[in-house]
Image (tube, rainbow, N blue to C red; front, side, top):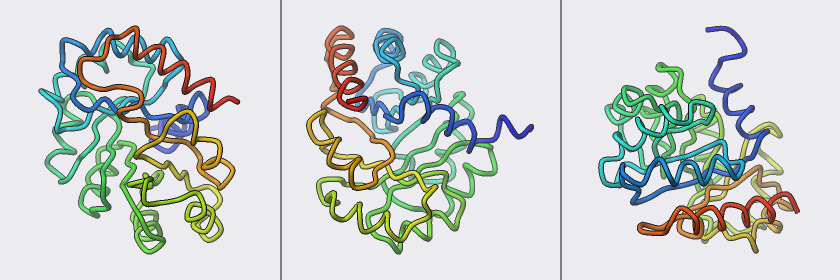
Length: 212
């Protein structure tokens, strides 16, 4: 693997394009192509299909085939076997609601980008020490901008901090001012049954809000 293709560089390139993760909880394989197109055409470079969605590995396989330029993988990854399953489906991204050292280690062994969930500085430092490429601050409803600011003051400047949970176009600015690097976007962007056109409108609203 050359230096340009490391997981850290893969994440950095995607974040440079747009540091917003589309979280498609409840996506079905049949919806995946149209929803993926709505997101990618709006500028999204990172897409996550939580494993508690219907047939998530099939959706991930479809998305990775159709949008090879995007960083695509799974969320709600809770154990090392699930990391292997996502990798086998073509996914290059592992996102978790918690920090499980075994999940991080397996993702690193397979050359995947891994973003574990943390809620405290203790968890954050442990996850970074284990090799995490960035941190999902979850649930953001519990982690205020003031908390993000305090964590940013002690964590490495290069650590990507991504609040997830309750993020809308209206509350991103205050988190960014506090030191957030990017965001994971859930039901405000996509919910089961929402049309591709509606998702595209929401995606564009998020992009506009993020770019100010």
